[in-house]
Image (cartoon, rainbow, N blue to C red; front, side, top):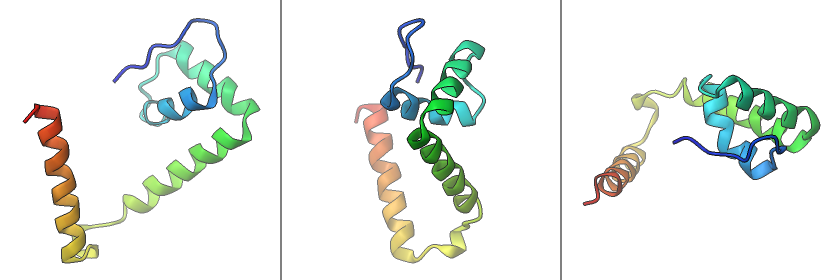
Length: 90
C-alpha cells in the first residue's frame, strides 16, 4: 500500500503513523523518508511511537509457536482466515 501525500507539506502525526512500517522496512522513497525523519525530529510523540513499534518487533521476533497456547494459536488462525477472506473478497 502506497500512501500519497501532498508534495512539500509537512507530515501530520496520522500520516507519520501510517508510514512507520514502510520506514522500518526501508521502503520509503528518499524524499518521503526525509519528510518522515523531519517530522520525527520535531515530534516526541511519533518518535516514541516508532520506538514502541521497534520494541514490539524485537519482542515478537523472539516468539515461536511453542510460546503460544492452543487458544492463542486458534485465535491467530481465525484472524488470518478472516483477513484472507476479506482480501480475496469471499
